[in-house]
Figure 1 (cartoon, one colour):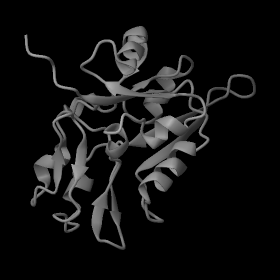
Figure 2: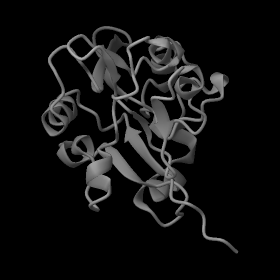
Figure 3: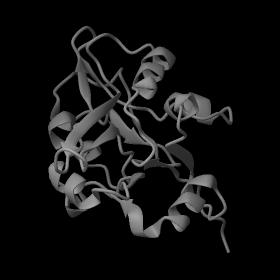
Figure 4: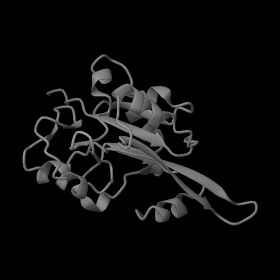
Length: 202
């Protein structure tokens, strides 16, 4: 039997995210991202619950989902957006002329037009670090270890083990669009239903 191709993915445990923004800062530093351009954001969700003792604050890290079926690729007129053999979605800046079709097509609001270069940018999952056997900057820097990166096709990889151990909490954003995101969330044990409704993705 042929060995399954490697498919990079990430699991983000929302129970562990404290909203410290270290991942967003590390992303900018590692990839020299311009001011006003965001490859990695952390949204504050809340407070959720009833005052005074049941209030909860949640944080929602958001970046390119590196989908199996990326809608951004289908709409790109110059084929600037493409997918590597191991599932990472990238943008060839030399082919991008800033039409922004991909920005409109992405249901995750994960792309930004760089006003200086007039090209679209987004998370690249630190592909250069993965190729060296290192973790992406966001995962390496996370102070609580809420991000796990690995090969989704390898049942023994860290990311697959986290998914297997938390099946009831696994949550893919906007499943109705059929993009099949490779960035998967573990919903918080408290307030999961309320949180999902608050981001409009039940």
